[in-house]
Length: 214
Image (cartoon, rainbow, N blue to C red; front, top):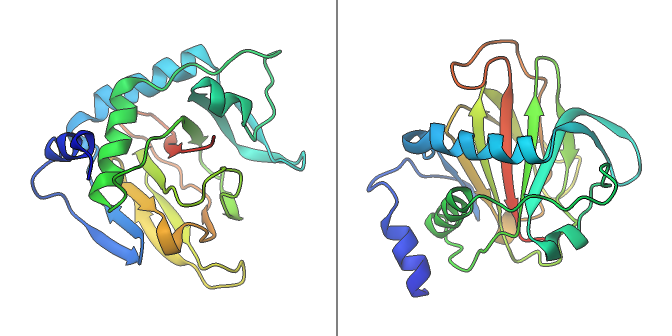
């Protein structure tokens, strides 16, 4: 393990919750709570620089969720979401978010993860995300780190085939899921969001997904 990974690992809370959902898929409940306002403020900086817009799939189909992105130049050049802003570059990932994503990956057994992109989904009541695989990254040995803010949702983590019955996981504000290794290509999605109100995010749920794209 590198010295950077060890230093980042030492900054984590001593005993966060840690549940192995599948080999390589780890749920850490409430891991982001200690710094949730700082983390969400950093996410708002991203959204101010690159406003949310309705997502479009690589095949051109509209999605219900609203999205935006941040990341470095190599990640931008390998982006999978069509850019809507006449060639504007993504804003950089705020350092506080990038370092937290690295610490989450280290905690989950992936000490070499260095994300170059942060994708933000914003859900409102009734919106969902169908089962899919994350297949657009260049290196599938790298994990996905997913951080939840705001309203709770039911996250679906399935198998390696779309027809495999998924596990239903209630995700709440501050929860983190990391999946990689043998679970990297599991299908996953989000059931329709129930209406509600959160003190930090209002009527929305935000999901921050950290990846190594390039």
